[in-house]
Length: 404
Image (tube, rainbow, N blue to C red; front, top):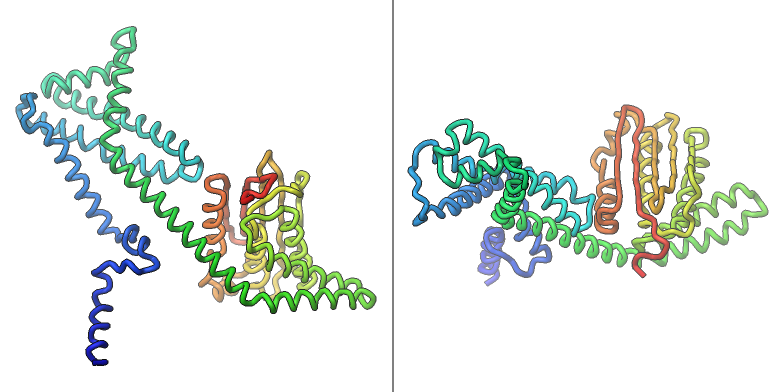
């Protein structure tokens, strides 16, 4: 019986990719938004456009328009329907570039404007090509009518042709609503899945933190007692222990919330730099350039600035054996937005090779958090040269806790 059960389990494992398992925790990601290979994507897109063109050509089956299928008619109508392909892909490309810049409503408005403009441009190009090659009158009555509208928009003083062409552009866009809607829905669906995964990950981390909370509490309480006892012995050492306690306390308690008062994170961040400056003596040079009054009571996403500085220390200080390092932080408030710049020296190539495996992981996690917390209301830029690494982050400032 056990042998038979083992055979069944083996068969099930071999065929697990062929059948949907509705009990999988990653069901949506595994089956509905499964990543495709380049060949699969190309094949699916070609099949879709073949169906798209054939479907719209079926209009002429039983149509009252009497067309003689001469070479000029076939080529002209082929160009006419194939123009949807570049319009779709250029619009999709623009959508992917601007989706981080607008809210959902304005994103669709901007996409619609781009789509209409592209449709008009390609309509003009198709009719111009057909007229240049064969003459519009030699193709069909419809081609001649619409070609005149697009190629001679100022034929009269009433601007009738302009309004006709725009209304025709909008009507033609209806044919692309389905593929573009699929693209938009897929993007929204991916965002929802990513948000759900982030929430699940956050709950998991909170559970781990809860299970291990006794040890950090014990450590922080004892460090506070140690600081009190060291005050009379060495003020410098007592300050060092106090800074260490504050940093540990911040990372333990504030990391569980999505937002934090800026003053709290900035205080923890500066204390972290003080600790490292004391630890590495003359090897680390810290420069703080505050270009405007700090927003002490405003809220920002928690642990973002702190993590960026940690990354800068890791790649610029921890990996360098004996090299002198520096880190420069710039802060500026522009309206209701905070501009944060971190510039740090980087380690030698041979030192970095040891940590190449996790390179870029911190920035990827930060970008994912910003995507879900700030939506499109942020800017994140980083650049590397031979000797420095620069990160520029612009965040929204809020006067009240966004989750309250």
